[in-house]
Image 1 (tube, rainbow, N blue to C red):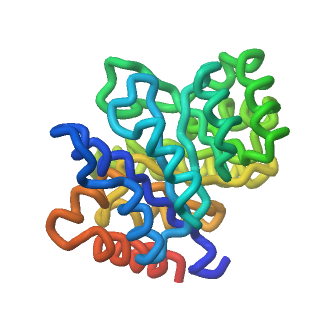
Image 2: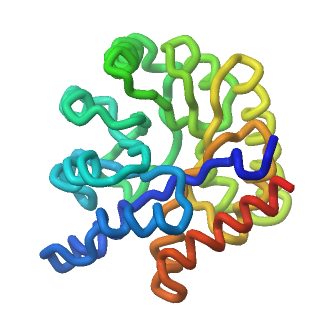
Length: 244
């Protein structure tokens, strides 16, 4: 697999978080999306949460109308979010678990436990021409369930891998490697994301069956020190090095 074939989706949620901390229009997540494109991102990810804590409805409308890169809308499995996705028809919709009490997404979606609920939603999104992915743990049971509901893509949650160190991190990495191989074996495109940084990205990027990484919070934080474009370019360099 060529090094460049590993795509980078840049999540701009936390540009909006900073904006919302004070109100007003600055910093503008749509401007961040344009900068990400200039720095070599392959797509833009934005999570429209039910409580609108960062990305807003108007952000999604502007991103849909103003950016050239594919837009990946992260969304909860609710009728409200389904209607929004069908109205804007982004390139992709990633269904994620969501809790108002959490600071960030804390784990993967329990697809196996929600087959009957998720299957019609996946069908409606697919019929609208939206590529559907499901954000799940590195668990073969969840991968099989994702295939059963008709999703062509899964995104493996890398949070536990990033949070651990030493042997515990190695064990989490082994789980992800095994899950990515299983995804490929059953015909699913495999993505990965959550918590990835300069220090943790290379082992994940080196997994040949992973097609895309989605990274946001670290890049927005690193932008304080080196600029947004600089942070993205360095992340891209590390990804390419990992694939060589």
